[in-house]
Length: 217
Ligand SMILES: [Zn+2]
Image (cartoon, rainbow, N blue to C red; front, top):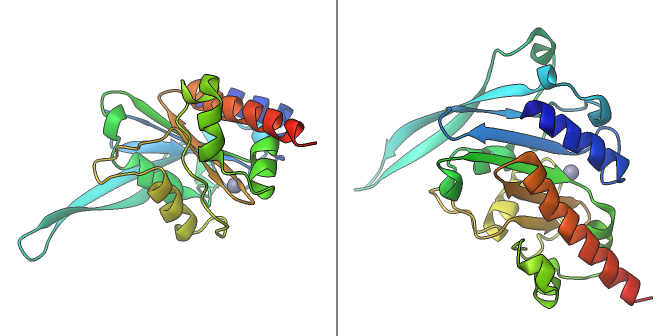
């Protein structure tokens, strides 16, 4: 599936949903204690599977006053010689929060895709609430659950990760209530069980945003 992720990034670049070094994707198989994430600063239209970073998920039990919580941390694992020279995407807090527990994807694969699709970003910039327009277009809401927008937050920050997780309604078991969330002035994050399925959530929302913006002229 790493090869498929590379194909989706080529297509995202072709559609102007990212410039060369933008965007990031992670993938975890339910029976593995690690996930793969795109590296930082690599040209996405020529990205190769051996450039991915392999990230181990560590968990430990933290007991407090009558409670026991699982604490998670990540560390880089050896993968390929090429990968060893690269750093994981700066958006790793966003991906790690969604990959540490797989929730409704617990017997499957979870793919998290972050891109900067033109009309989604333009719609949010124009003050449009993506979670609200989804309700007016049944062909969108039938297949894609759209969360309410995350406000302006700094890129590659823990705040961006926390706000996205909150708006997706991520719980401690890894369940999420939505398939996609927009980040104002920035982009979107989509989640599903394959790279192309996550891509389609973005495609559907992008199409509706284009229609909504066209109707306002
Ligand atoms: Zn971004």
